Structures are given as C-alpha cells and as structure tokens.
Image 1 (cartoon, rainbow, N blue to C red):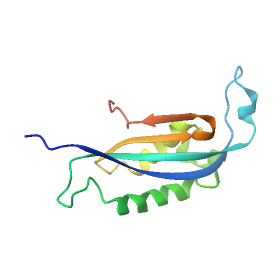
Image 2: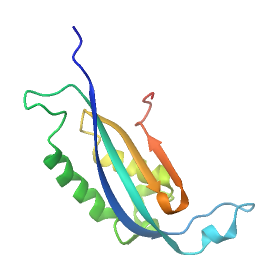
Image 3: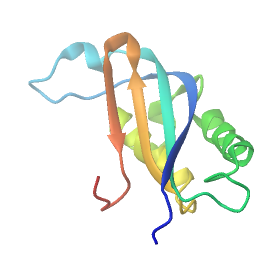
Image 4: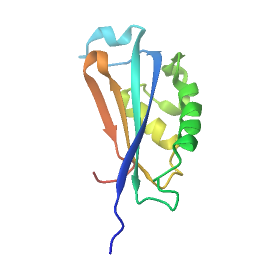
Length: 127
C-alpha cells in the first residue's frame, strides 16, 4: 500500500528594488529603479515521518530566514547568483538555496499589489 502524500508550505515576505532590461521594444519604465513587496511560498511534499510531519517547520523556517536575509531590502541586480531579477529567477534562487531538501516540491513568488506571480517546480520537474 502506498503511503499518503501531504503538501505543506511556509511563506515569507521581503521588499527589494531592481531594474530590468525589457529590450528595445519593451516598456521603458522597467529600466527605472523601482521596488516591490514580494511574497514567497515554499511547498514541501511527501509522506509523514515518524514525527507526524513532512518536514520540521522550525528547521525550514531557519533556512528560509537565511534566504530572506539575502533578498530583503536589497538591490536585486547586485545579487550575482540571481541573474536578471525577475520573479522567475527569484523563484529559482530560492529553490537553489533549498535544493538539498528532498521534499521540496514548489516555490511560488508573488507580487500581490500587481496581481502577479510565478511558480517553479525545480529543474526538469513536471507538475
């Protein structure tokens, strides 16, 4: 019999500034320095451990604090490992910071004030 799978998530928020190059036909306001309030969700998936959970949320929270510190109140263009500071690259950056977590299932990055967001399921993973 197959073990039941559970999804659980932890959310964190951060504020940051960036500039984007939208290319020659893109909206020029992206090139101006501007900022956003971001919400990030990290989802884990798996069966319950003998402790009754997928992962220890306290451990996950401590790991997310390290990632948040790298992003919060920063100029995202200066974070070399991020690349162009898009929501997609932010999601991949967060994933990479947790890539050794086998239960990692999904990272979502949102800018709710704009009604925007993206989801990332890891390199080569299917939904």
